[in-house]
Image (cartoon, rainbow, N blue to C red; front, top):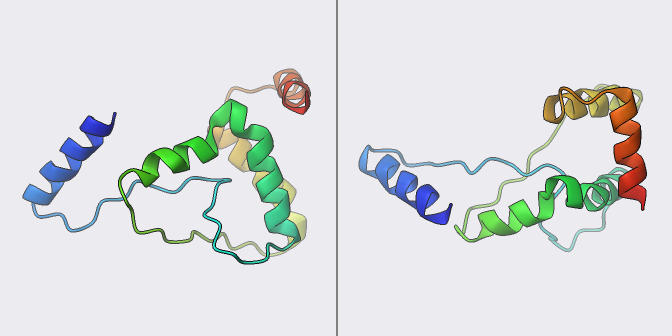
Length: 112
């Protein structure tokens, strides 16, 4: 995988590209020594709980091999009351065919 990504980056550079994005890694972040707020703590716990299923942190570690410039990603939302609906939409984006029963089994498995 490393070879494919590095080869693609070299080809893009030869074609004149000056920027290549490895994309963001949701629910994983660099520790910049900042004190996390309540929402960030919840996101960190979610990322930790879902690590065995998705591998957010291992993906971040994999991408670190390419020595990227890290740029924080932000999500704007109108009110904290919108967060459950946003979380559900993100869940559907990552697991579009996950039904209620499967989701419940997944949550139970993660909690073990």
